Length: 420
Ligand code: AMP
Ligand code: GLY
Image 1: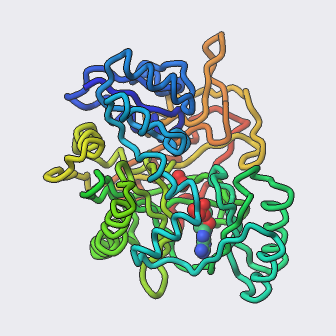
Image 2 (image 1 turned 90 degrees about the vertical axis):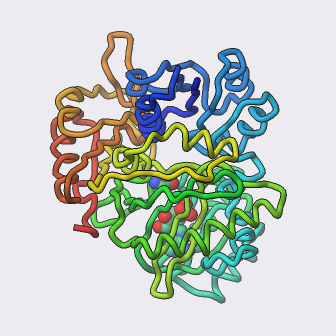
């Protein structure tokens, strides 16, 4: 099979690494890729959001399967344009990608499918949002309705914080047009789990769960990020819970998406809160989590490629996945300044030594003309350790982190603390 992976972060490095192991692979490209991905795939200088160029490349190279990493190309219609060209795509149509692209759409689908989720309201006007806030009180959650790179959510402990969030999102437009409307939600309490299901429109295959650390600071404090680390399996997510989520969340959602004429193909990422009343949906995403993907894939024993192809072509029935019984833990190394404006261009050394201890997935790196690896983004490296226990996995990941020579980078030292 000739395969094109779209994206250039840690998730896409992990996907390329897993796909490259497949005996069914004939040729692997990644657009745009990164210096880490270049070790396992041919990188192509096409941006992940340049849909016409991606489709033209896939057609010219007789690509059999395109695997979309991030959500942006999907919301821009990558899967639709590929379908029109007769090329299979792992990832949903633009209409189905609205599950992630619009928080309000996600809540409407969840309500129609009777998926348990937080009570919510959508507002297009700041005054009305403020009035509703004063009625409901804090704690409360304020979200930009559109895509805001995982940063459009404020979990407000006080009314003042919630009001400041409304002003920032709707009036100052800190997330641009994503803040034209806000969704305000009941605040759920419990352990948070990222669950993944591979879907072909009708059938779904559980892909397992990981727990992610969203806050930038140790002890899960400070601003939200795209994810500072993750581990799998998630101890709080028992097989019984997984079965419940497949039956009460994933399958009814697939039925509802099909009923709307927009069947969901690709990976459905359910952000769940394990509340005292049972699991509740925080949100759906239409892609693998990052860094959850880097945590889960080192545990996968099966060949990933046939499963992705089956999902993309509506033939998932009969497929299964075989997982290692080991544990996995990823530590994200980020550039100073993240999740604000990260410092770019600082040199990174020592990755060969680090790679002796753990998998090093490149998330935001570039190579300069002299061949020196440099930071090129907020989250820069995803360091994945595995072990017989979670503790061993953590020790392997931090041993690798400690061999990376990058003074301008930082990481949390407490990934996995809730489970350890
Ligand atoms: P999201 O971008 O919707 O995943 O939200 C980012 C983070 O905000 C989530 O991972 C949760 O930690 C938190 N969050 C979102 N919605 C809620 C909610 N209704 N209750 C509590 N926490 C939430
Ligand atoms: N790590 C959370 C996400 O990918 O959205």
